Length: 136
Image 1: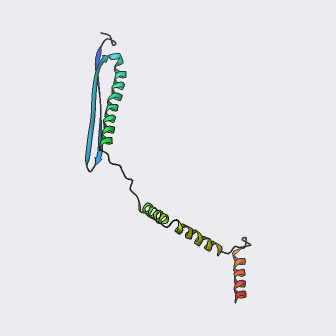
Image 2 (image 1 turned 180 degrees about the vertical axis):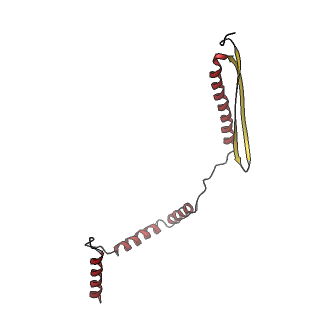
Image 3 (image 1 turned 30 degrees about the horizontal axis):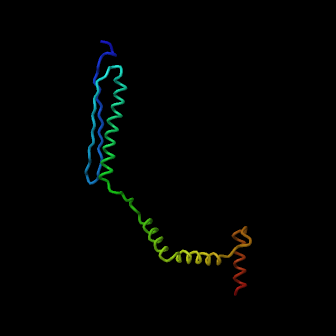
């Protein structure tokens, strides 16, 4: 019997374990076999593998669709604070935000502007000392 005429049986299987939490899991499994000429065995093996894998993954997807609850992303403390601040700001009609902006502007207005920013530390110290004497 030649290689092309000799029949072989090819079997492939695929399993998937789904972790459901709380030490629970679900197992999904599919197995399939085919009889084919030996020359086609490798090709049929790949085809069977893709078939059984796709069948298992379809079952996993269907299970998850039927049995899953929406997953909420855990919120850290900073996100909670930002969320709370945003709600408060909206409740105040944005007044708090406007007050914060005005306060910042007042603080900025009080900052002296140096006309000669290239002074050395020694020159600046002498200038400050002279100003203190003038203000007394």
